[in-house]
Length: 304
Image 1 (cartoon, rainbow, N blue to C red):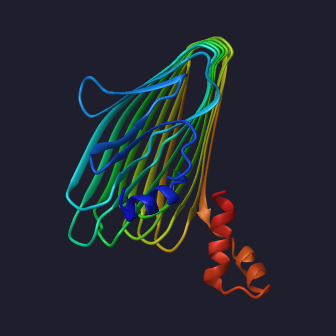
Image 2: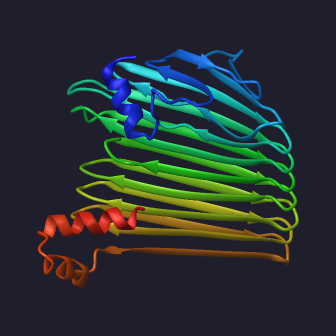
């Protein structure tokens, strides 16, 4: 593991010296470390680059780490990960990706993730994305699909914390009876960065629920596009919300969509886009902060 990898892992919230469970560390397009536990088995994917993670029903409160890092220019890392989570399991999966490239080069990480979640399982999936280095061609593309069984609970925490010049994130979830799918997304873009986020949630089971919330800040000349679609095919509840702050010349396009195909489906969407309120800036400046410091404090608080 080189020093850049260690720095990227730290920034995406993974302590390289404190893996306390099963893990797979991916570095520059190849697996550089892999460990299973009694209840969480991680194996190389039979179809090529990537891994298969099998999480036993005996898993209670355990963690699995699956970060990926690209630390030099010219790497196109494409990976496929499949998760099989047995009924009743309780697990936290800590993912995330960091890409580093210097001026004139490019770096790409592209991940296809499939989650098969058994009845009554509880899953928290955390992914943070970051780019470092002087290159303006650092890209992260992810596609995630969740198939969620009855009475299961899945929470996704997704953050892009700066430096990624181009990002695409597509997330799809299908829910059965009494299952819950929760998303908390936070995005920060700057300069000429672009990011496209798509959430597509299908509520098939009676009393299934989803709550998809995105908060973002677009600075510089960056552009963000947010698309969310909730389809209710049974008695269910769904909520999607996009809150965005524009700074400098940043722009955001939000497209929430609801499709109620059952008379007992209750679906709600909200979207709000605007700039930082002047009175907030003035109040913090009156306490001794510069305008730039005041804006940064407001942004940090908004993205918490």
